[in-house]
Amino acid sequence: MTTSAAQARYPLTQGVNPWLVTCSVMLPTFMEVLDTAIASVALPYIAGSLSASNSEATWVLTSYLVANAVILPASNWFARRFGRKRFLLTCVVIFTVASFFCGAAPSLAVILLARIVQGAGGGALQPLSQSILLESFSLKDRSKAMAAYGLGIVVAPVLGPTLGGWLTDTWTWRYAFYINIPVGILAVIMISRFVHDPPYIKHAKVGAFDNIGFGLLAVWTGCLQIVLDKGQEDDWFGATWVRWAIAALIVAFISWIWRSWTNPKGLVDLHILKNRNFRTGCYMITLLGMCIYITIAILPLYYQEILGYTAFTAGLVVGPRGIGSFIGSPVIGILGSRIDNRKLLCAGFLGFAVCAFIFGTVDLSIGPYTLLIPITLTGFALSFVFVPLATLATSTLSNQEMGNATGLFNMLRNIGGSIGIAMATTAVTRRADSHQTDLAAGLAPTSAILQQKSAFIAAYLGHRIGPPGARPGSFALIYNLMQQQAAMLAYIDVFRWTAVLAVICAAAVWLFGKPPQHAGPPPGAH
Image 1 (cartoon, rainbow, N blue to C red):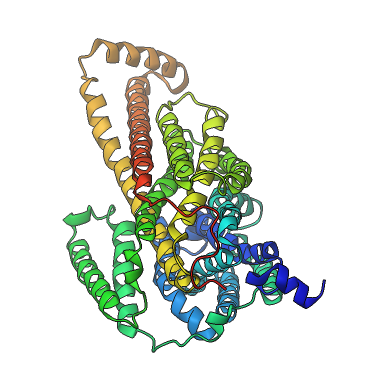
Image 2 (spheres, rainbow, N blue to C red; image 1 turned 90 degrees about the vertical axis):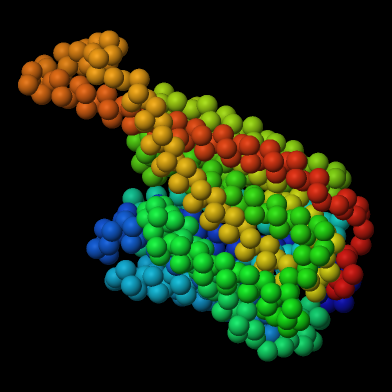
């Protein structure tokens, strides 16, 4: 095929098959999302290897998320200033090199510095990839493009814990970072070959960098992440530093909104929120971030902390969610251009709510296959959520607005996920204490049932540890069982609250305006 014929067939991608562009930009996106989840399994091993506490090791996650969130909204300015392709390649190289230094880090300080650099490089990968992908397809085919994109976004966090556990158990935690190197090299080769900047990027006139806006963004996102990560440990508002951090967060956040709204050359153009569908999409993606990250974080913890599974085994148990996403992505790619995306989105949230409610029926007798079907259906339902949501949110935006929109869109998903995880972990801790108090109220020392069970257990223990320790041992076992039951009930509460949140999301779907059907590209498309 000649060059002119190729450009006539694929005008939006300058003669390159858009599916080659899709594969090229999906590699760094998948790598970045995977890395967010893969490191969480290795935290205890990182702490032990680098002589740090588990609490200190959590900064390996926090430092990455902070740098990631700060760069996300700024990605549009950098892409227009230096060229989107050049900026994407730079980010992939930074992320890949930083991954090597994360794996080779000899101390906690070095790995934290490397994670900050890695987060800065990875922050722009998702919005850049998404904007390139959306502009590579016509409006009527965007559902197919977002199905491929959604497959990477949804499957990567599911594979992360499983792959991280396997790499850590088989070799060492360092390979959880080294695995990014070959993927990054392949991404650089494919992006260099198949991705091109559109004319409006090549000839864009970009103003000076908004240093004040960027600084305010860094302050409020950093304060938010630190408070969410460490607030539970210090009893939230009971700690003076938390109150000061929240005060700084509020002041910086309001100042950032004012700066972004009033400064026409600001880092982020918040006037895009005047668009009804995008404004609704931002609200919905925040709630989606809460829903998806709660289940991704809490369900494996339930298997590990309550049922005693290893990290690798727990990752295998929740792995079928990726199979559901793999099946659902091509289905939504076909249906997305034929059915009102609001109906698909509503169905996805309702399906997710049903699965979350089923998770809320667990008990201590479940096995590794008990929740196989609902876990698989969760992945299938999420395919029906992410793809229509991204399509609806961007359906009425021009290509020139896409970079600014996707940066803001992805930032809100990360923030929603951080808030969701913090809420869920806090709820698990505090609801467990509440349930333990309730259970203990029914186990008075004079209770006939308690005395009967204690005597039965003491008789069993007497043959193994001797009569002197049998009676105290029986009460210790009963207390441990009560703690386990209380923790299980706390997880059930969180699963059910997540189901309620998903139902609210299903109702909120209808805030979207009806999208155009089978229309041409939006104004300004190239």
